[in-house]
Length: 264
Image 1 (cartoon, one colour):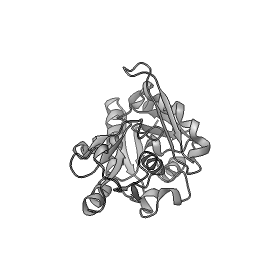
Image 2 (image 1 turned 90 degrees about the vertical axis):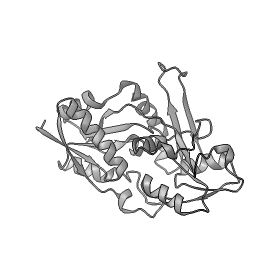
Image 3 (image 1 turned 180 degrees about the vertical axis):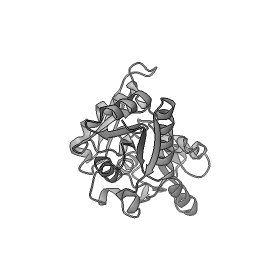
């Protein structure tokens, strides 16, 4: 293993927060690390719905390429962004402790689900969220929205015709924006994406020393449930149909549960 590990990351504020957190954990364990920001397809094409871009590796392909080319030694991802099948030569070395996996309703003030008026407009580009919103409230009008967390919040604030948007609780908490959350939506209403709230560290296959360092510093055994159930959605998720899944730790206070929703 090199004396200084190069950690690849996307350049958005949330991705950089996550990368700094992983670097902190690695350095606390004695592994010197530098960050290498890399732009991905999803960052470059910011005005097209994700389902129309034409690749499942929207936020990961360029990081995989840098890893395989030896320009970085490991990469940090939101686990929910990873395709269910890693490309040849790349593997997941560690999965972090999971933040709250739920989705958040974000409006103006402390807007709650039951307070959304009939015919309201909700901004989201996620097919998974759209399907579940319309399943619960067929009267809602949905509009597309892209961009990082801060960009989407700014668009919401600048568009009075929109009532709310839906974002991952984990991203809002990590960016110190939890005050914007009107309600953490219950999973019975809005089941999250597979692996939502967890981070994944990828390395080159065969780089055992880097994988061991990442696992020792970052890996959370309980969160392996996130990995265990992600593969269940291969055929659906990779075809751009919305899949929602949640697995919970059987040792937690809540009962063990693996829920899944698929929407045709």
